[in-house]
Amino acid sequence: MRCENTNCAIGRDAIRRQDAYGNINSLILRARAQRQDIMPDIPQLDESQQAGQRLMVGFDGPSLDDRLKYYIDGLKVGGIILFARNLEEPRQMEKLCADAQDYARQCGQPPLFIGIDQEGGVVSRLKPPFTQFAGNPSIRTRDDAVNFARITARELAQIGVNMNMAPVLDVLPEQGDSVMAERAFGHDPHFVSQLGTAVIDIFQQNRILAVAKHFPGIGRTVLDSHLEMPDLDTALEKLETRDIIPFRSAIDSSVSGIMLSHIRYRSLDHQWPASLSVHIADKLLRRRYGYQGLVLTDDLDMGAIAGHYPLDKIVSQCLSGAVDILLICHPSEKIQSAHGHIIDLQNKNEAWNRKTAAALDRILKMKTTFLISD
Image (cartoon, rainbow, N blue to C red; front, side, top):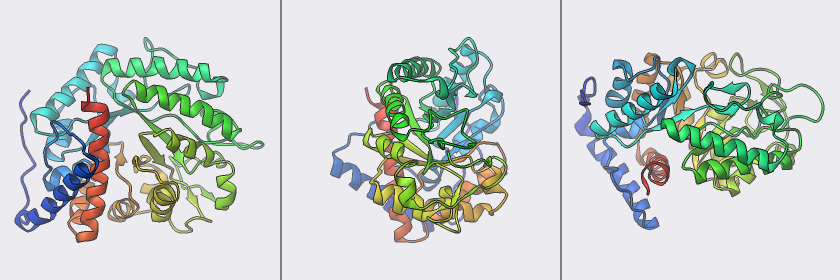
């Protein structure tokens, strides 16, 4: 499969940017040397690749079509995410994932994250003949969690998926309704931690990146962020005694990724929802809790975000907040625009160079560990 290399010419100001993206590569290499990492088959990245690695995108159709080729070759995206519209039957899914990876390789790209939401129960993209589970509310023991994770990891690996947007670590309220009632393990944060970390461990032992969601917890909310932005006014001290406990357990279990919610936690940041909040993503998750893995947004096409903020501000807030991967799940010109905004920001100054290098180092480290290493 030949890399067509269309729509990806370096812009007129590329020469001016050579020093900027060269400096970013130098910072990445320095971080690798300090860790004594060996990262085979991942070359130094040009500015378009540096920006593309920060994007994980959705697409239409069950095959490697021209638009998906453009995302991989033209925009250099670092990952794709699968939905029902992409999935027909196991052999087709396997071919789609293999074709996408082969095309990325032909185009000189790092391997792709290929993600999916396979929580079990109401959020399960894979239908029969894949194993069907009743969902997190039906998981009552650690053995149940291990069984779900082991079977799911095996079936994902068989079709070429390497990242699962699971487990859900949101904690339900002891009384009252919750938007997560049909998707959460339960209302006891220690029980949620026990089952969630079991799922994380099994996924990652089987080379599937686990993404815990939705930090810092949406179990207390009833409004669906797919439609509108929920507000929550709960003090950090209260969140830390309940909602955040499973996420700290996940961090202790070296979870590969954590997904930020689209909830506005007014006591933490009165202006920005978690996915766009520097305070929540950087100061709380990165610095206070010491998380060094991947930080992902939830889908930026959701009404909670797309209905309130322009795209340039969304991208700027995400990158300011130490977010590594921006998730845009519907194919549109927004993906190309986001790529351009990322390029503009990462070349802005030395501080942005360092932010970019840190994010790319985390991304490439995970790709080496889960997608390349023997």
